[in-house]
Image 1 (cartoon, rainbow, N blue to C red):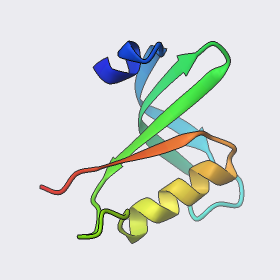
Image 2 (image 1 turned 30 degrees about the horizontal axis):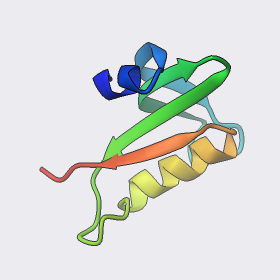
Image 3 (image 1 turned 180 degrees about the vertical axis):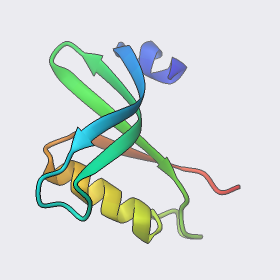
Image 4 (image 1 turned 45 degrees about the vertical axis):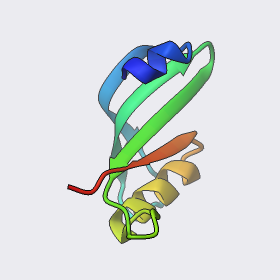
Length: 79
């Protein structure tokens, strides 16, 4: 969240609900969301493969969010 503020985003929210009509799931929750003017950035934090790509469930979540017209950035963690 602090990094978003450093890049000019404000109104930081956690677990932001996004409705996904016709998606893999009817709704998703992005881990972090920030706004900069009219721009929204949704951060999806999740597990990644050894090559750094999102695992299947994260990939489906990202696909749904993109389908809903959201600007999404994936941040991998493996722990």
